[in-house]
Image (cartoon, rainbow, N blue to C red):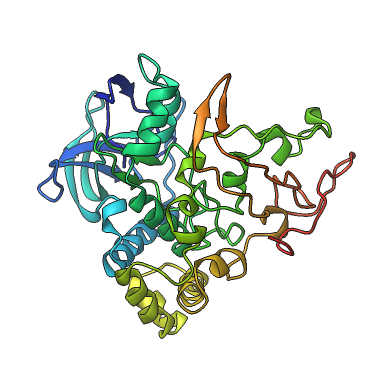
Length: 368
């Protein structure tokens, strides 16, 4: 989880965005993290977080599901040497009284390292004073640890992250990168196999290349061609930092050894090894690991399983590895993305059923 409260970073003051979780979250002391702080997520407290939650609900099955996903990710990160890019996670007892409420908690909670730094979204939009574009670009070009950018892309594909956006990528003052809120993983909803601003060909990435309204085929957009401004999140494209713009089979040694181990297991053994809640999630991890290890990163991204529905499988656009600011953020080198988008409904991932023309021009996943 991200750090809590106000902080000064890169010469500006920032306040963390409010989280959307319906569960109670608490800051707690701990000896298990470098900064001695943790965020504790506690489910099924019979007191609502807000006045509107007068009758708090307990979804114990969902709480257990996501706790198992988090713990599976923790073990996988340890096995694959990726613990530097995610917060440490564990289960422990909580004995505490909710301030100003008085309710005494006496049960297990999910403990997460409190990550230092601020989100990419916060850095770009919410500083006080607002970050000057030149200073922001200097940070993103020259101070961010882009070795970790590569590792973050590997993590997101391996774990089939389907909700990676600018609010859950954290950047610290030393340029280190951490990924938080990683529970939407392992094909958990049977629909989205991967959706991350770190992964080209996914919708969230492609939105940063083209206009959001164009990608979502909103009625009021019409059929005008998007301008393709260079959103600064494009500087987290792994292709900018690897030889020839491809990872292929050139994975970090720890990752390669980990994938080799998983690819030799059965999905049932993977489920038992990592404690994943459902067989289909173990199959997702097994298939992704096998494809990455045997065929390479880009094959796993575009042709491996699990796969996104075809309306969410976009063409590769060229990376924009240098950005400048004029009247807006623009790519600082030749950059001409193909603005074609797939047939189908970009909201549901299903067929187009609206009373207006589908602006898609190709079957997603048939060409990259």
